[in-house]
Image (cartoon, rainbow, N blue to C red; front, side, top):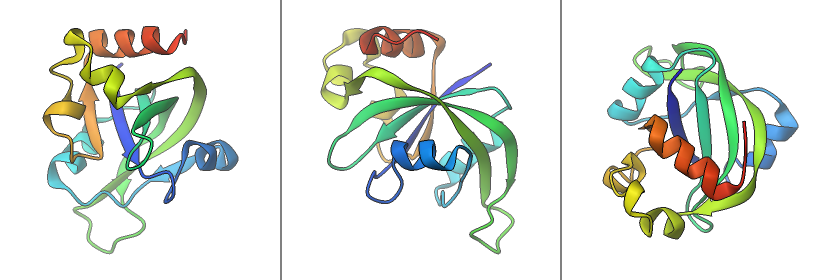
Length: 137
């Protein structure tokens, strides 16, 4: 199992939207590196759901339910999507400042490649973030 971080502006698509839908296509990704990460995702991989823009915080945990397929919002087969579903809301959101202020997270892709809407998270980073949130799997 691998770990990933997915980002969305909550005004466009929020954690609450995913909860309401129960299952969703993670589509609209138009960055080649982020697309490549989507292609690497496997069913059962865990996703940290990050609200970007105003709140900048990790708020939930989701999982991949269907591996990459052509993005239904695009006619170009180079762009991909995965299907996801929520697992649980974090007990306490982990803010961007929380991440920036933790030396153990200084190399997390969220900080190194901040513009990517999809990025990998190491096992250690994932565990630290769950600990910070007070959430158990």
